[in-house]
Image 1 (tube, helix red, strand yellow):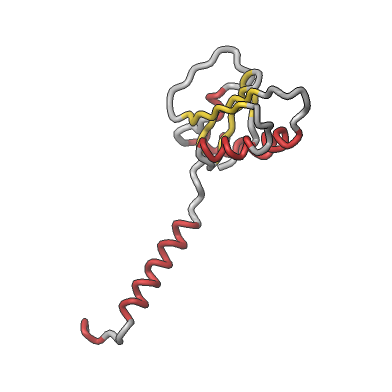
Image 2 (cartoon, one colour):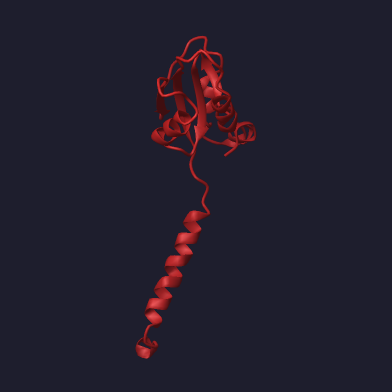
Amino acid sequence: MVGDFEPGRELWVANRIRFFFVSALESLPMETKLHVFVCQMFAHHSYPEFDQKLRELRAVPLMHSISAARTVLTAKELKDALRKTLDDSDRILVVEVCAGWASRRAENNLGDLLPPRGGPALTLWKQRWGE
């Protein structure tokens, strides 16, 4: 019967439902976004921390000082993560690639970093680049 709930039972049920949905959302994989970034470095020394960050991001070079990476970070978060590895005088530009793009004679094809719509091509793409 509808009126047979114990006092506080509705709150307990509501909290259980909320917990279920929150835990389900947290277990979903984060969507990766494609970013192209340019780093202009003025210091005349090596940047081992920056190089390590590029390896962690699995970034690929497109042209001199221009790279691309797929990440769950926003453009600002990626910029901040890279900024920590550079000198104060260095510059960074990070752009999220959402749709159209064009390149000529880049070191790596930017199109390879965009996932196919589905089918076997998507499976192969995920094997190479991950989720």
